[in-house]
Length: 231
Image 1 (cartoon, one colour):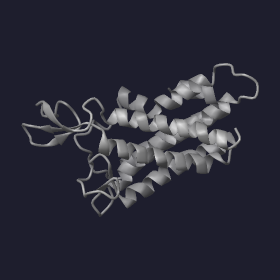
Image 2: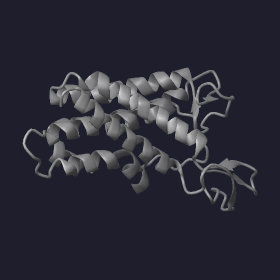
Image 3: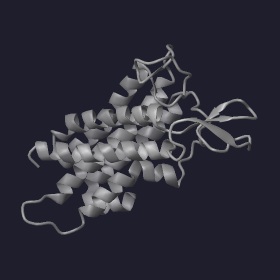
Image 4: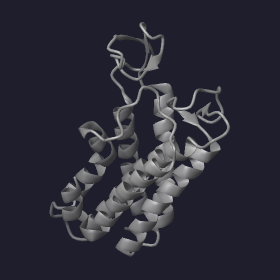
């Protein structure tokens, strides 16, 4: 995916990708994050890589296709790459920084109090973290590409992507309960090895699917923002 981003958007897209990867890794290790509900290991697997970087890679790949006159596909691709990775960074930063909150998260900010690590749970600290993560990635994209308008637009789109991720996680992501441990889980088989029972949401939609949907929506919003900016 990194190769596709570099081929389609050059060093500007590469700088955005580096900003996302380095900052997300750093904040994840520097901040004592509270564990998510029955989460995967810290190392990203293939599904997580696709969920966070798939839309950016596809946009960069599309930029390699010859376009008609007056269409700046590399410029559009930089906006899409920046917007989608800003959303991925916002989600990662929100989870890490939100773990520092002294107040319990609420479902979609205004809903009921939920346990830390619950999908859709939001805190003020997490929102600040999301905004900072999106701003960092968008700022790097704006500087690297020489497109000042990308900084505020990418920040707003990235934060919006985090909100979409939270909404989907709270409302439609599959939720399960382990009969053996009486513990909630995100998976059809709990880490103890026992099968779980669905208690809400769509059984086929897991956290990776939610992340992919959020970054894809952010990519679309990035394309719209590019057009509105005069691209």
